[in-house]
Image 1 (cartoon, rainbow, N blue to C red):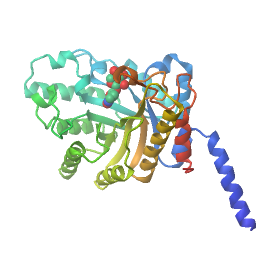
Image 2 (image 1 turned 60 degrees about the vertical axis):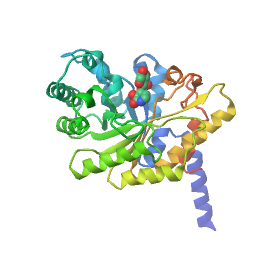
Image 3 (image 1 turned 90 degrees about the horizontal axis):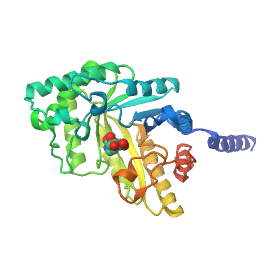
Image 4 (image 1 turned 120 degrees about the vertical axis):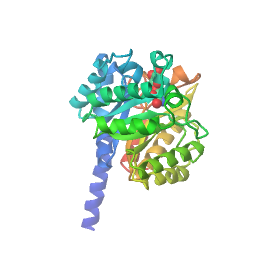
Length: 338
Ligand code: XIL
């Protein structure tokens, strides 16, 4: 009896205590990093900086590590912004995900509109990776090397990189990234791959073959920009994650946000919270899932209203930095309460 009473007290106490903990403290007890995309608001908005540093153990610079930002003109690189994230992360003991060395949408005009041969574009790609990955070597948890390599049907997306160099540009980019940053995990990042479909199958075949041939690849990044009424199928998701885990890869949720169709109602906020919780719970069930990053944390600063007409409020804090239901659900999932 006495023994039971003691454990009951212990459990009650730890449940009470979890309310006072931050997301990052709870994530740490479960052995994963919890993160957010962030932008340079962290230099000007004290509340933004406070919440980011307090709640998250990882960050992904939302845009400033992309090609058009770090390499705006041929021969000119800018690192002022990039360095600011590293400084913030060091100060707050956070990990940083580098995003991304190559992405078709972030390739500046001076690249897409110039004339290249395979050799000259390979030289440029190598110089870019050497300069950017080299500069941050030892400071990053991971790099998304090529972002969104695949089309929905599993074919290789047409871009200046694939058209001029060939489909092997991704393999060469991975080898080059490893050469200049031997410690960052090298990740293949894409959207619409949470389900088993043509795109996730193609990605699976690519990483499996890469692993077999010794091409450096350490993990898969699942973006997961989803609507509040997304039909999340945990069984299918876990089966999908398992096949990647079986290849020895790390799994990162890299850009989760759950957009709500306006008008926003309490019911929709609850549905959003449930979905955030379901995805986190699945991640916690898969030991290879080490990273859970959301694409921002406050509805004050999100790409959603600019990119999805009629949708908004996709994140876990509101515009005034008040925690939303989703924030509390994530906490209780971490604390094992549901
Ligand atoms: C988005 C940023 O959030 C926006 O600010 C920017 O204008 C465009 O890019 N998938 C990705 C991210 O991999 O890099 C994108 O980020 C969102 C979709």
